[in-house]
Length: 204
Image (cartoon, rainbow, N blue to C red; front, side, top):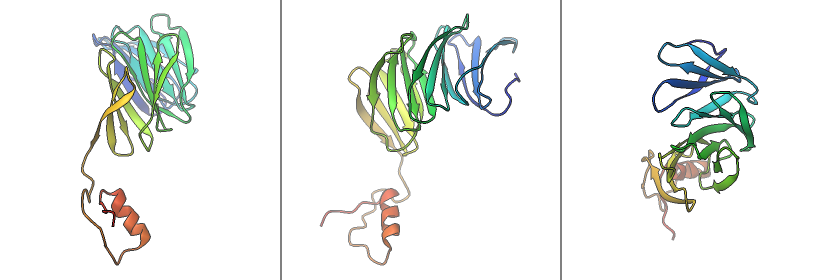
């Protein structure tokens, strides 16, 4: 399937696997029929490069996140624009929909995760805790659990109803748990780098 001018940054499938949505650096979202590869539509006017797309389980709702920080929710069959959300400061890098399409999660370069109701676009919550851009989000089918992955090296699991982070997952960094209490012979910059890479220093 060809059609984008430039890189394709995201793709999403309906649950039955029959509809594919793709978002590209050319600022378009394209819809395809997977059975024969035919194009179903080209959606322009997305506010810049489209970094992420999501389809509802039934393939009826499409969400695209753009370089200008906005989200666009569309009806796939029409394809009518239902709402535009000013979601983030900076690029939107991740979107996810609950199984019924009633809840939308978005993440961005501003380090935040935001929750919205669909299709009216009412903001439900802003989830904060990541210290760097959040490049991806995933939501359980029932919309109760959300995962977010950030450039800060962590994956956070959130309880959607309460908006609280229930677990932080982090892989070991190069100096994870190395005790550098009293370490000498290093510069301040090297000391800070060791702490960033997982070393620990006990209070004296």
